[in-house]
Length: 221
Image (tube, rainbow, N blue to C red; front, side):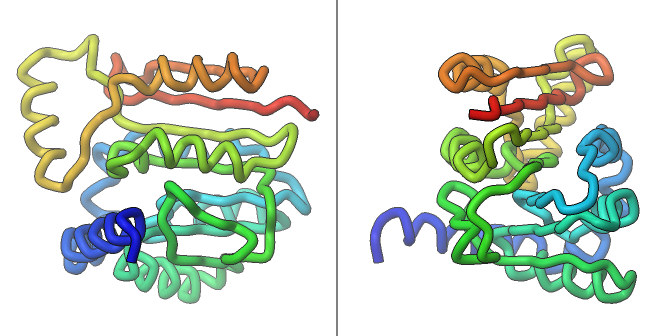
């Protein structure tokens, strides 16, 4: 086993341990502080025939919502945690949502091997990058898996720059219990990628900096 594969296996085990029991109450508890998820899904604008991938789909909550909004789109989800995928698949079956799931590492995910699809029209990451150790590699891989003219949508923890210091301190301590680290360099890294790719980038701060929201659109060619 290579060092990369060993690291992937270790991270998968960590996520399974973290969410083995949490997955059963995840959606109930996270609705109060994973802000901006519904906004992201609502702005995907994925009409009939479009292919959509959620990186780090967790319990499938976002994909099930997307299935209601975009019933004619082809919706897919991947996650490194087998435990989370088990919950996602069960939830999709209960709601009759036509979704496809695959287990994999976001830093080197091969969509063709998993789904028989080379590129996606829409890829989104909802509170995912803050949980991936090599988040820049995951970001780069996500862009590689985008079709020309496709868009990458991201919502994640910001730096709480306009919120009280005590709130930021408490939030960071709470998130650390779940191996979550807000990415302070996210805007700078996205700007550099957009310049390199000739892509359009929209970056917004939500809820006084509580969350950051970004959309990166690739050129058509």
